[in-house]
Amino acid sequence: MALQKFLAKKLERVDTKYFQCEACNTHIALAEDIYFFIPGERIIEHGMVFHKLANVRIDEPINHHQLGRHTVADIYCIRCGNKLGWKYIKVCGLHIHHHAGSNYTLRDNMMKLLMSKLLQMSSPGLDYTAPPVMENKH
Image (cartoon, rainbow, N blue to C red; front, side, top):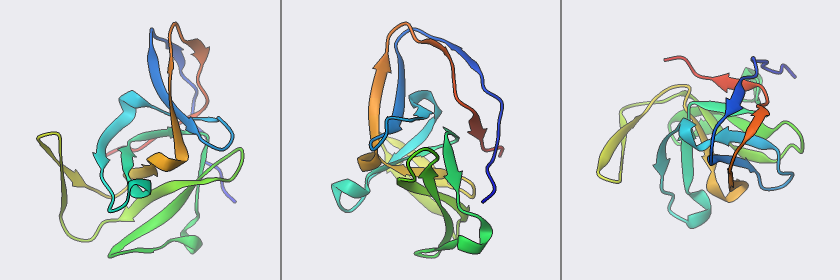
């Protein structure tokens, strides 16, 4: 199982909003790293698409699978193994999502996390070294 390692960054923010794994409270993402929200057919399928994540493991190519017409790799919490969502490896066709008066295009390498698997937190006066961060380059 290959783990992706990235540099940690120093955070010094006031009232930082972030997300953590609902099962083990491990830090997963900052709210500022959300691309857009994708509503699901059922509330447990609502998700957010991020361009940076921390403390996650992404399935290797041998485990990639189809989700509709897209090829995806599952994303898991590195601490407890909870399945949090998936990374779009190959998006087939043009998929435009409409939310809050804006249009968003789903692209390869975007990462969708299910809101039902995350806890949204707010930390006033946050001052700590963040866990390793994984970033998608477009």
